Image (cartoon, rainbow, N blue to C red):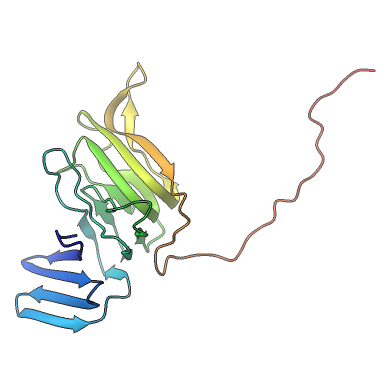
Length: 215
């Protein structure tokens, strides 16, 4: 987001950079690219789709140790790829409890590791808000190099495989990769177009013998 509280997206593919600014108050969207500036009335529907890898997903770089917010208030966004999504930076909301923002990250493929925390350009502590869905959610090169800190995640994860984040030393501390600090998002918000299911199997209670006592 910018200093005026507007949501800003920067999309980069090769040498092409597109900047999209959404002004909810004015109900306008401005797109700036190599061909110029275009202004539209209205706002995006809340989904960004990439056909191929997303190699660097994240918010603004830290400034003096402070994590600038990536999502402006009332921004509901789902980021989708049919391949890998690599998170390289912090992703946070401007106002977590009162701003009504929500982020979802979805990898379409179902086999193999498709949601990564990248090994490069990673601060010692990563902060995340939002829901993630993937074939696997894991850290790249989790078994190499020195310990990189802790991943702080407030949200949820839906994954076919729960991938590795780090390795421990003999004292129980992190030797490589990241430690995990995960918390549930208690606001009950869902990203737009986030996949859901209505197929449930009831877990009916049944009587079981838990202890035996001689008479």
